[in-house]
Image (cartoon, rainbow, N blue to C red; front, side, top):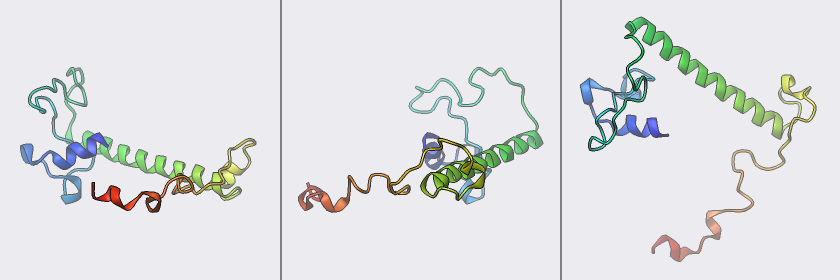
Length: 125
């Protein structure tokens, strides 16, 4: 969330282009000195301990990070699928004690909260 917000509002420092507009996925411009000078460190390598990497190594690292995120999303969706529909993921079906969820996975608070229960006057005040 924080990185995405920073990437959306970073503007164009040093020719930065957001990844949705053709820029490099996983790259964020340096953050040191931003926020009225209150941020004293960059996000990656804040103390400058790591040597500079070639563009090929950086590209490989970004690709690994993107694939890591994709695999994590597949894993989370597999766990959600198995918890809501037992037996849907054979690799997880054999785990004894795997928790099952009887609620709505994509709207977990649907039974407790709905916009229809909010009085109309709260929209305008």
